[in-house]
Image (cartoon, rainbow, N blue to C red; front, side, top):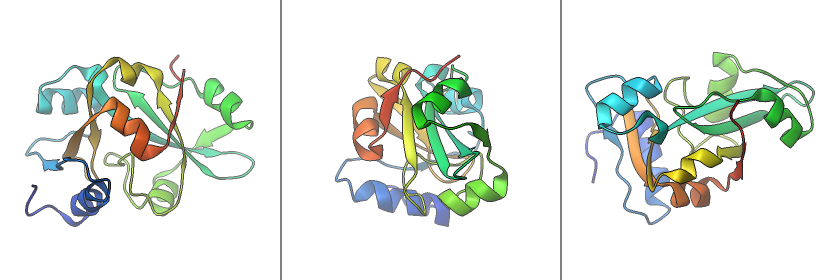
Length: 160
């Protein structure tokens, strides 16, 4: 079990504990802010890194979370067709206000409000994936199937 975590990482650990899965948040000495940094830090393929990207819908101004493989770029048009409205960029303040976390450490769970979530189908090619855990150097490993379960995300084709 993880000990002495920062407040944001502990918040994520507490949420993960509620799912009764053996998932431990790790705070690493090196940054995991980018997918390449994270893959290097944990020793996995960049495709196994879960990038948590929050967008802001243009008409309803609601947050939309896309969990995509670290190897992929999100095709915003695909997300727009899934949500039925155009997407805009979410600034740092919007991300923090809707998720409770800062860009670079947004986890797939534990947000301030419910956020509609889409999961890159390519993540399911991996048995295990790594996701951010509240800070730019905190991560946790999870099975791709459990990621789908705990986020209640909709598995979709999201890459360019």
